[in-house]
Amino acid sequence: MTYAKLADFMDQQNAETLAAYRKGDFARAATPALNVAEVLR
Amino acid sequence: MAVTFGRGAELTAGRLVAALATLVSFGAVAPAQAGVDRPPQFIVMAFDNCTELERWQELTDFAAELNRNGDRLHFTFFVSGSNFIADGSRNIYEGPHHRRGYSRISFGGSPEQIRKRVEYANALYLDGHEIASHAVGHFNGAAWSVRDWEKEFSAFSAVLKNVGPNNGLAESKFAFSTTDVIGFRAPYLATGAGLYGALKAHGFRYDTSGVSVANAWPEKVDGVWRFNLAMLKIQGSGKGTLSMDYNFFVAQSRAVYDPRRYEAVREQTLQTYLRYFKTNYAGNRAPLHIGHHFMNYGAAPITRRSSRSRARSAACRKCAA
Image 1 (spheres, rainbow over the protein chains, first blue to last red):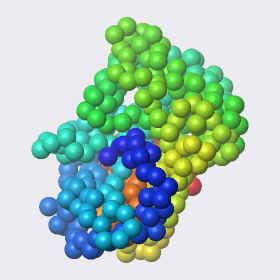
Image 2: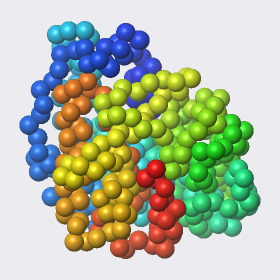
Image 3: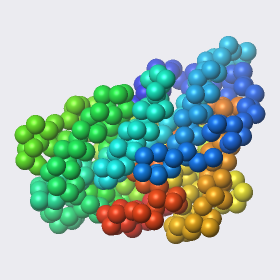
């Protein structure tokens, strides 16, 4: 995505949501089992 | 596996980022178990400078290939204003504290080269990519005042507005207006109080010249988002770098291309970006920032660069700062 789109996204979030993002206060994703060869395949 | 495009330029890291973006699109905004919904994993990739027409073509082809199955991936291009001023028109520009007609990097060559460069920028913009500012003369403005930066920003806007008349190109104009340029990356990442005092007043909504830890969410300071490059540890070496191609080149090779180490440094780079992705993806989902150039630092084509490219490479040595 472009930085302009990231700016749009960031401007749409309220302070509480951004604080939660910074703390990682949400259900975490599992670490993907990826390696370079798989990603580039 | 290297992925080769166009005239042999290798955009392997870009390919990796594109592939990761495809993967994360399936995991965006997953149901929440606590706090807030899990945010999307944003990956932002940008390219700085824009002199060589071959590179414009390669990046245009690269973007088109990545989007051949749908319009999904877009980049930000931080362009230098000097590349849109023909050599013969160079005296229209005067950078702060520099003589008229001088730029730290190349001017744009012939009017015909300017015309083609404008066409590339317009085509990318119309395909959903972003054109942003890398200033005009590629000077180190760390010590510049607010007024100096206002002068440079005004010069950049004038370059965009007057690209046709400046270069004797009656039909050339940009497909976007100066107000569509909302982002900035400082040459050499050289920032100072003057820059930050001038950005918002000139309509910029974000700056990408700073540096943060890898899992930092952006902060808005004085009305301008700081989208900072990340400090990373190079996998397999332990050396520090920024998430920027030239900084890898310096850290891994002291800015000297060594074909014997090509495979090793490429593998290190890819592993480093993949770790950056995995850590943030499973962590706090801070956006990934990848800052590259219209250049293939450390890759094979570096040996086939034009003299203009070599001049610019020398000018960019301080990018590692």
